[in-house]
Image 1 (cartoon, rainbow, N blue to C red):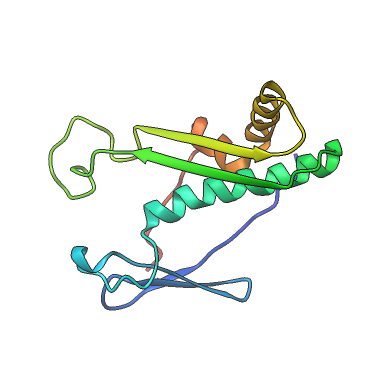
Image 2 (image 1 turned 90 degrees about the horizontal axis):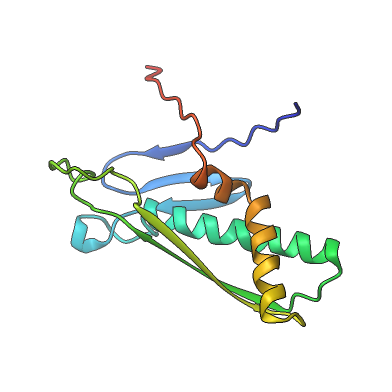
Length: 145
């Protein structure tokens, strides 16, 4: 099995903002001002959903090129529903993460409605983030001092 490791290192100092330099890109995660942050960037949950949309779009472009489909554009909306009680440290019977994640795509290509749905299905099967969300992935964590 061939593997590729993708790494990100994030830094948080005072306040809510978390910064990372990722391949020459400065990225910031923050909280809205109403939640105590400075609104310097999207929340982690927003980035998570954006990452799924971005991965689906990227895989769609690859698949369209491979399948010789002229994909003029694609709009991907991702909605996630969660109960925020757990992340706020309050008792809840719900899991902390998203209960459901919904992906809707508008595809501008010369395909029938059925072909567009089949294309989206093929793309989602190939999307690593879709796979990580849909299937159980072992996540390890440790304090390193």
